[in-house]
Amino acid sequence: MLDPAPFDMAVAAAQLPGAVGMIVDREGVRFARAVGEADAVGHLPMREDTLFQIASMTKAITSVAAMQLVEQGRLSLDGDIGLVLTDLANPQVMVGTGADGKPQLRPAKGPITLRHLLTHTAGLGYFFIHPEVLGYYAATGMPEPGSLASIKMPLMFDPGESWEYSVATDWVGQAVEAVTGQTLGDYLAAHVTGPLGMTSTAFRAAMPADAAKVHVRAPGGGWEINPAVLGGGEFHMGGGGLSSTAADYARFVRMLLRGGELDGVQILQAETVAEMSRNQVAPLRAGKMGSAMPELAGPYDTFPDQHTGWGLGFLINPEPGPHGRSPGSLAWAGIFNSYYWFDPAKGVGGVFMSQLAPFGDAGALAAFGALEELAYAS
Image (cartoon, one colour):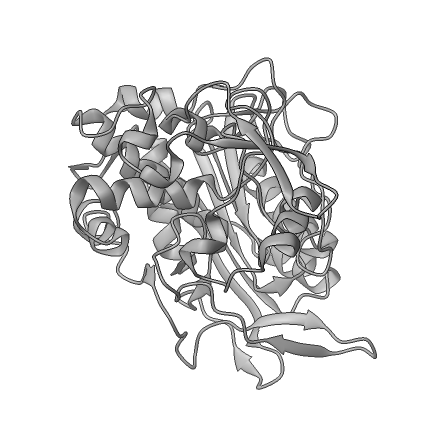
């Protein structure tokens, strides 16, 4: 196993409550380390099997589920998704606000497709990132968190014309449910997480007592606990509702590194994984996010010096990363400062789990970078 000291020191220097780091290759786990506390208020030690709310790391899993259905011909990448999801039929684009304060809309130039949803080019947004969406909800009524209303909004631009991070993968999960007649959680358990042996990964309306708590830095020092739970609500959030462990997610990463197979179980065809790993949005640049609510997530740009792309579920760096990542590697994150990457060229990947708000914490990113450097140092 690799020397844990660099990772331990990075987590300590970042002043994080605690974290779990794992490094994998196609053959297995090369490094696993739990550091600090899962609950820095109640002083619960962190374990390698501690449960985390993985938030938007859910998106990759939901994307895999949708691509299974594309392989089977039950979903179309480029057909009108409004034929599957009536809420997305005949989409409207918001062009401004009238004198009465109500949104002004026009018909979109074309339909939304599953490819648009998987690549965040559908025109949708997030209220905590986009002032336009926050303003729309201010005018029409702020929906309850976890409700289907919370992902219903007019488009900010015509499908395919820009890249903006969004609720689109929540709609991907709804498409999976529509064509299978199952809840997203049941479908994943039967066809993705279950076959992969991801026994701790599920949608949970409440987290168990020994799960990692979401921490917020207290104004006078120390920690406060944010009680938010993303896994409950009216529907299974394909864009952010799963909780999981580092070990479970490491199995998912290994499956992607192995071209869709793990332990003799073929989750996706190798050709499908290759297509998911190809930049789908050129000449658009993906990955840069603003902020409408910095207490939840500040502005974020993983590689500000690169013209980053997006596959069918992942960010793609076209040039080498600063910590060793090869060009063409794939990655993303969860809002409570959890991160992953996988590098098909070098056959290595990793998972970094912490529970801290707001997103994009500099210390968490530094610790994740240290984990990545450790992966390439061996």
